[in-house]
Length: 431
Image: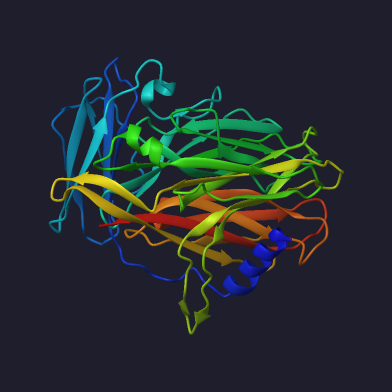
């Protein structure tokens, strides 16, 4: 009943929202620990602006590095070499006079996964690289999206991505395939890492063999003026599991004191490969719904938790589904050069948009770029209102260029049209 209540509310209240709402443009920067290059630690700094004609430049008190990662979109990129155990603060100067700072602490080489840099764990997969990033209006809170694609087609495809060690994982996404048959999402969730860095994805075909590759997206967050050790203590991951059923659902709320919801994920379990459980929802539970009137749309003030749903398909395969949510306190202390140690309020933003009815529905949902940094991406499919067999997730792709998400699902083997709702979460710090 909880699943149906959530889905009905999204479908009836948010269905009229379009993706055309424009938000104030902003400035974006990120810095992060890179891999060792010629046995020397590196760090990377990138910057960009949403404002046409505004460019940026980067300077840092360190020597240049021979490591050159590809830019994440239309970005200025600089790489530097440094010494383990040392922190480096880069200055980012925008051409309209705006200035930002970004600090990287080079720690974790050796025992830390990937030597402290971003890492993909599946043999043969592409290196985990930064594909996009966003910064909040304060200029202090930054998030980046690291992605990796497998390179060895399999019927059940798995991969994990670690964000760099100076960031903390807050969410992620996954990309399977809808052609020629399908590669559907069964898992996208945080896992196995005390440093809170690892996001794991599993996709699989259903009924018809389709060896495939998938893409894993991990969203990491950092806050200027706060050590990663402190940040790890402020980001909580919680989970809640369903019982065993053909169409299980679950939901989870954050622990007391960590009510600012950042993102989430979902994990299905059934002992039946290729005919097991497939995700139909991994999405935020909105705090407040908004209505549209003459093109003006209200939005939620964030989320109260995360919910997940899955189903078997064509062949009975009862299983369970686990939902995960990341969250932080609504008030934190951050050191800044002008304010010293100062208390900031953590404000969250959520936006859900529902597609039309289709066999393969999809929608793109924009956030508020430059105001809220992107932290969470989710999707839910309403297949029960329109079909019988089911419509299953294959794409939940966070997009930094719009601080939003692109989502898609599909029916498979039998006609079962549906709507899909994409949901984006963002966070900003307010002094």
